Amino acid sequence: MGEARFGTRRQWYNTTMVGWVAPFAILLAGIVSMVTGEPLPVAAILLLVVISLVVAILRDRSPHSSYVLDAHCITLSNARETLRVPFEDIADASLIDRIGAREYIRQYRMQQGAEPRQMQAIVNRCTRFCTVDIGLTTFTLGLGRSFIDRLPNARHDLVLLRLRNGEALLLSPMYNQAMVETIGRRLAGL
Image (cartoon, rainbow, N blue to C red; front, side, top):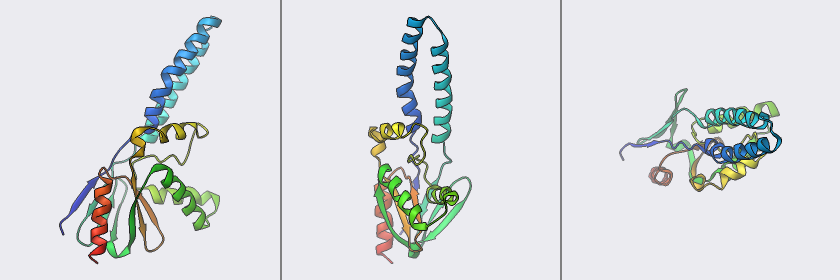
């Protein structure tokens, strides 16, 4: 079998959410400002929108990753690290959506029995090759997450790669179904 390369998908969920909410917030602040005669509400909302936009862009901007499947292993790489996983070490690969990925990682964290300060390290280890923010942390008390989960492009599935040692890796390939099928064929050929 030849080599298969998969690029990562990048989706600007948080930036999209700020883009949808900002005009309404500015309009509402403008109405309040016109009624009260005070320019402070508009200035405060504009400052909040700019800060929200910067935070959203920083959260959505993640290092590009690549996934290369050759005859013997899958090589996962990003700007910081490269991980080679032999196919013998892979238990399975399956499609999973954002909501399912969030819940799986929460359950995985609990199964690890880690202390609270170690929880973020476990999340980072699972999502280090994923370029899509799945919404594990929120600044909007969950309102933004539920809005993003309803966006049409948020329904694109991610790939959950489970290893025989119990580790799980969340991946975000552009062609997720093709990647799962390729991994399945390689695992069936073992």
